[in-house]
Image: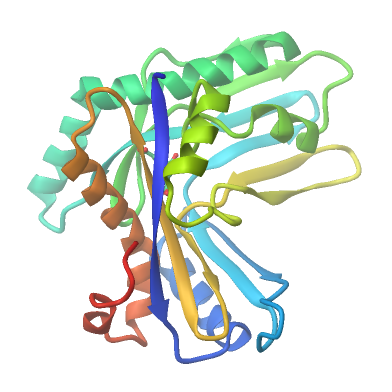
Length: 268
Ligand SMILES: C=C(O[C@@H]1C=C(C(=O)O)C=C[C@H]1O)C(=O)O
């Protein structure tokens, strides 16, 4: 086993019903980070519940964009919290870029994508080293992978099904990582780490990974966050990484919520 991504959840009381809470939350997520891919989708609520639930989030990770015979992937893996102080923020970025553990974690993802994509391509450009990708709260290691597909090119949904789940959200080897996730995570992932996107009649499309997201039900917002675990992982640092990942959604909530109330909520 080279890597497994393990996640936890945070359940926060929300005063408004999902369809009322979602638009405000979505516009705050949009204002926070213009590069994030926003999504909100109504879901069937719990039987006997008050109405539909809403899946909502702002993910930084594009699984793929397909236009004709060209496909572009942007996997992210390897994370560091950002700092308000510019000097400390730059130092965190530099240290992430130089971290052997994070580079290894990232390489596992890039290698898996290269292997899955290669049989479909006449040309595959995979940069040898990752670059930094910034969200408002986090630094990530990212690699932009570009490929020219054999003709006839598979459509965007077929490509998504072939590439997903990547070791950025599951692990390597996939089947064993998935069984560990099922055994070890205290709450089922539900739609977290699933795909959100679209495909048109020509087979072009854009699919992102449902991260930095939560499910709004009649009374609560359940947030999800995970971290890639490799042999060199430090448990406390991985836990802190999931906390930092929660802040994307928590920041958007704080405009209407007293975050102090959150601390006592069920953290599982
Ligand atoms: C699993 C999550 O994020 C993924 C895991 C990352 C990592 O382990 O460094 C980085 C970006 C995402 O691919 C999450 O946001 O919950």
